[in-house]
Length: 202
Image 1: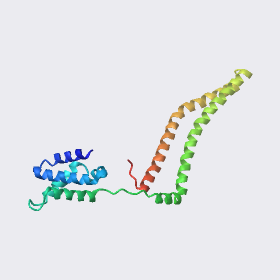
Image 2 (image 1 turned 90 degrees about the vertical axis):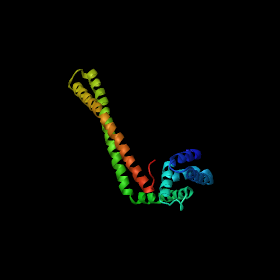
Image 3 (image 1 turned 180 degrees about the vertical axis):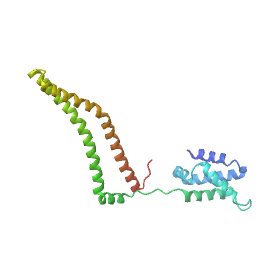
Image 4 (image 1 turned 60 degrees about the horizontal axis):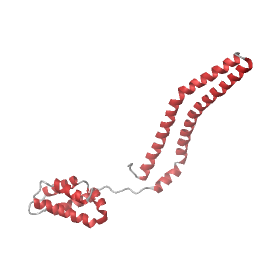
């Protein structure tokens, strides 16, 4: 929002005032923003929306008698109110993060080890079953050419089909489990880090 847009909206929201009071309030903010220069955007952000500024001005005028207050004084009061109500930006607490990382090393490294072990177990199960299906299938083909349709051939064929069936059955749910446990694990670590640093998620 440009300065002119801000002032135009402010003027529109002050429709309940007399023309003189509206002009006085808008001129006050025009001068205030002009003095800010290149920081006008930051100043507008700290003041809030034009509607919020207008509400503060109208509320301030409502508490003053006709002879004791003016729109420009109300505008000045609204600027002071915005300064007190604008939340301060938290500075990143990097030192605290480093300290907690060192002190809590046994806990977070254990959590990561458990996560890695769980993922490796799931992936290893699927890979192992697929490998068994391939190896047993090759064995059954070898026995088929060597001894024909004998017991060994049927046995290895059964093992191959069984392992292949388990692979097809488990790869999808195991893959989803790996995906979401990874996502939740690192999302949890991210939330903890942002909380320590005092940062809000954008």
